[in-house]
Amino acid sequence: METSRRRFLLTSGVAAAGLAIGGRGQVRHSSSPAVPRFRLPLAVPPVLQPVRVEGINDYYEIDQRETRVEVLPGKRTAIWGYQGIMPGPTIRVRRGRKAVIHHFNKLSVPTVVHLHGGSTPADSDGFPTDLVMPGQSKIYVYPNEHAAATLWYHDHAMDQTGHNLFMGLAGLYIVEDEDEQNLPLPRGAYDVPLILQDRRFTPDGSLQYLPDPVSGAMTDTLLVNGVPWPRFEVSARRYRFRILNACNAKSFRLGLSSGEFFVQIATDGGLLSAPRKVKEIPLAMAERVEVLVDFSSHPVGTQLFLKDSTERSEGLLRFDIVRKERDDSAVPARLADVQEIPAERAARLRTLVFTRGSSEGPDARWAINGRQFDADRPIVAPRFDDIEVWRILNHTFGEPHTILHPVHLHLVNFQILERNGGPPLAHETGWKDTVALMTGEEIRLIARFGGYHGRYLLHCHNLEHEDRGMMARFDVV
Ligand code: C2O
Ligand code: CU
Ligand code: CU
Image 1: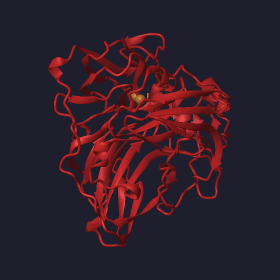
Image 2: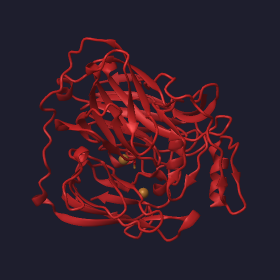
Image 3: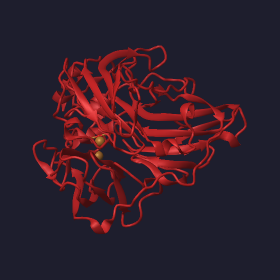
Image 4: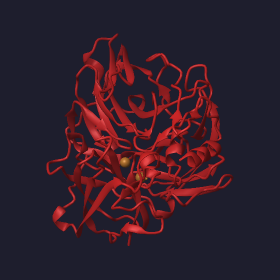
């Protein structure tokens, strides 16, 4: 472990001040500089503009580069960002228009970009060994045949995904379409992304990546859109929030401090058929949820928190209701036409078991069906356009007693048929690409393996598990 940790420290290009490796390979760490909560204003990542538009193609260029930015007040933090910012710029595309994105690797490490939630040709999907070397570039092509949804793009480099995301390589990717645009949902300044991330810093403000092999990155500072515990000034009207859990290894249980319901309108894969009220939303790593929150029942001057009930803190974000405002948005009774994938048409049933790998302790590894990631061998190979049911089990027993594996499939969106023999949870019916399983849990999902032929991935989205073997290649043949 020492060697690999030293290697990453050396390759990371950032100082690791405040970090000392103790005698038994244990890492001592310092806590992050204190940040006053709910003082800094929420930022919203800028929308990336195409460099050229031609026919149905929108051409973009992105530099992956190291910059020093102010995350903590008065400190400079070296980050690796798409366009030098953390999170990266938001890419907003229109269904049916092709995005051609030229990524330039100006970092000191190999990188590869994946569009999470996208149905992407295999050569643009970001297979972990399709590395782009420092000084090189690659053009990724996204056909955007997906219905309106909140996706995200992030690094996927072999064994280094956890580190590279921690350094900042992640951003939002929003697909819009006409049907969704015709709905009376809040838009413009009232359609707000909330990208949840967690970090740890050294006393001088450098990022401090401490990957525990079992629980994942150890952190103590919560960022929303790159700002620690921000406050957000809102009008007393309805908002749409697109919430992404972009943490390496932290999951949330989101709620509002007022006890109000969220009106959930979308999951990972886009709009629900109809809105539904949910009081608490568990949000595991890589999952997205879109909600409407109506602040109009509160008087100006009210403060409200977006809470995480897995923690005993006030909240992640404070909403300050500062003004009245006219609101012409509405909650539509119907949102989209979500067709159920017919289970009786499934060509086969497969079982995938998520377990510990061979070793324990600091060398812990993770496995799927007893195998660690092998880039050369697919674990399963669905036939093109076949419908399949996958039974997924979290069989990670031992210490600690419960371990979360958010299981993610590339290429396809799926529907959850069953969770532990019963129906899926309230917030997870609809199109999904990531599903959270705690120790002992079992789900059945259904998907159609269409779109493209080739080499794809399934993996745990605890990035430290992913980097330690809990990933498999699947081929569509
Ligand atoms: Cu969000 Cu394979 O990843
Ligand atoms: Cu993905
Ligand atoms: Cu896991």
